[in-house]
Image (cartoon, rainbow, N blue to C red; front, top):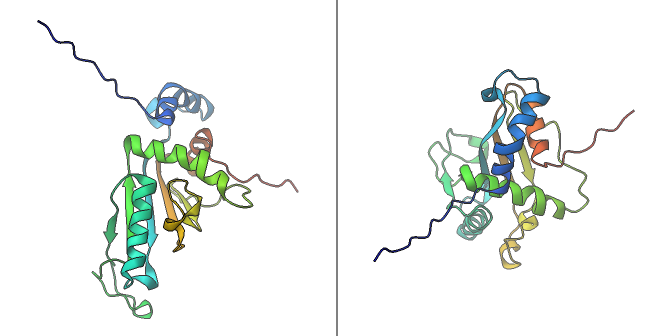
Length: 195
């Protein structure tokens, strides 16, 4: 007697499917690129929190780790100090100066989808994100003042307020291409005022 095995198809995140099926062709035509491999793409998203003056406070560290675990779905990693800074009382190799998570693949696209469509619209008096936070390589840095905009966190998780840094590592030929990619993903950039 033969047994039936149900084939489970791996479900791609919505934004990854959109990128692969439609955005690659649109970006190639819109940016007038010769090759599909020149199309800008999102490589990884790094979500990090600097603990700073609270580096000795265990409760603050636990809150930060719990926050990152809940909003990214991944276990965060403690970051060590790379060099000594006397005014901040930090020595090279000192542990717990920050906590970060690196997202790739399906989790990266799911986090981006939730950030753009659910979390950023919850920011009070939101007028869009800055257009000047691109570096020379086309990577984008987004600072979030308070973690309470994420719906994954309940009231107890937001008792100790802290900020987040979200870095979008984008392989693009120039920052304008990276911005076009993020706009296609639905990133709400602030509108430039005409003078």
